[in-house]
Image 1: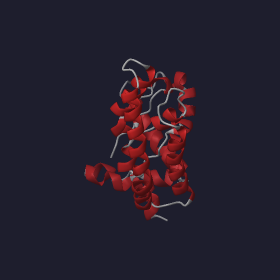
Image 2 (image 1 turned 90 degrees about the vertical axis):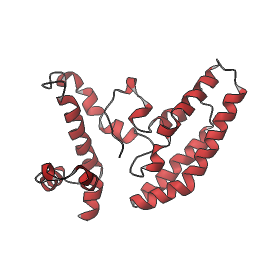
Image 3 (image 1 turned 120 degrees about the horizontal axis):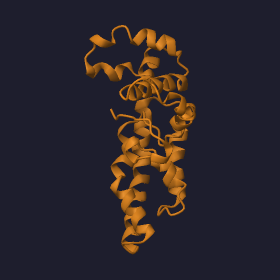
Image 4 (image 1 turned 45 degrees about the vertical axis):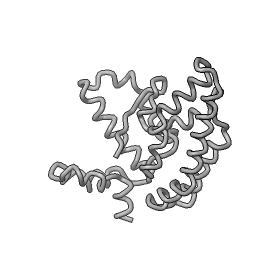
Amino acid sequence: MPTFRICRPDRFSAEDANASWFRRRHNPSKPVKSKRLDELFVVDAEARRKTLTTAARHFRRQETARPLLDDIRSKIEAAQSAALPSSALSKACQYALAVWKKLTRFLEYPELELSTNLADNSMRPVALGRKNWLHIGSPQAGPKVAAILSIVESCRRLQVPVRDYFFAILPGLADLPIRCLPDLTSIVWVARHS
């Protein structure tokens, strides 16, 4: 499973997930036509609208999104070969190809969203209250708080009562082997308790 970090929007890194598809779609110097990227977003929107299971969403992405990505990559490579090496277009192409594996990570993990807009919007209150949280206790506390808030936001998004989820998960957590942790995610918990 990929790891997630909370990051400041002005310090965004493609390593933080695969969210830069949204930014690439709205970047004026992009070498890829928005239409192809919009088609990627349509695939995920349909999956959400139809409330597909994780397995069905994975199959749908492999069937529909992978060919779109192959086409997008070939267009990026063609644009790079046609552009001057030091031009903005060439640099944009180089960047896209350098982070291609990170941009396509959503194909491997169907639980990932194509864009982090949902996460960004849900974390906005944290960003707004950042100055109030400067003295959180210790430098080690920040990542722990971020992990807890990530779980809370996942539960909120899935409309799972956070207290019920924590009450069911936390009591035996210390005794479980690490390989069992993916079974404790909120999305799996919801599927088992629905």
